[in-house]
Length: 248
Ligand SMILES: Nc1ncnc2c1ncn2[C@@H]1O[C@H](COP(=O)(O)OP(=O)(O)OP(=O)(O)O)[C@@H](O)[C@H]1O
Image 1 (tube, rainbow, N blue to C red):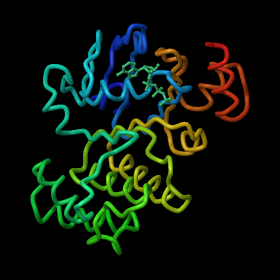
Image 2 (image 1 turned 45 degrees about the horizontal axis):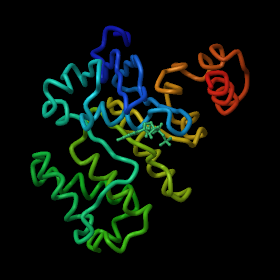
Image 3 (image 1 turned 60 degrees about the vertical axis):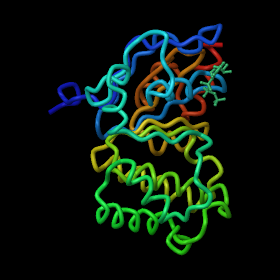
Image 4 (image 1 turned 30 degrees about the horizontal axis):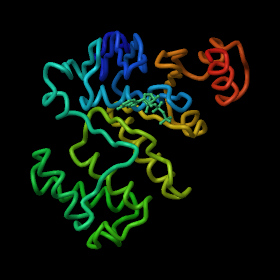
């Protein structure tokens, strides 16, 4: 089955949002299961606003969004049940330990207790948090908190994951663990959309890249397609800077 016959993980059509001025405009986006999509753009391009609308946390002015065929606006609970969202400044319950936090989150998602326990142990081990499993999160470093939140987002094996700047503030070893975990999740058939300013992350991890500027998608494709679109050879950084400077 080729990608066009497969049910899309995400379909966005004509998405628009204004805060006095247009922040997202006429955005169309389709992401398929097994795709790792990096949404790039300069500061203020509209990336977080786009992700928040897809996650059902902000109402668009116009357009439609569906996740595996579930309409985010008409059936927000149905859509939210199969996705997970990690904001750029995630909140944790500081008085809980990672094991308690994961049990709590798994309960919210209705994951069966034994399955949740096994999955929590796997995730904490993979992310290097196992030695800290019974410590309160309030004493954790920013990176440890981020990894705990990521484990929480993966506890119910969401088919669609939205991540806003997931690698900011992680040291090299932690970033590697997180990248490997995300890659495995995609290889298992899920879809991921992430925003990042670390272009090397997009270049190495993403199967497809979108470049947003002024709320509009300037280009969308793999790196060779983006190079063609920009008429520039070289790194993703060269292509990104060329496209965004031209748009500005
Ligand atoms: N709730 C809000 N009220 C008013 N303006 C907002 C609101 N949320 C976002 N904006 C504005 O919308 C524009 C896009 O913001 P957004 O956070 O989506 O950009 P971004 O691409 O994620 O930027 P960055 O890379 O800096 O995180 C900005 O000009 C921002 O000030």
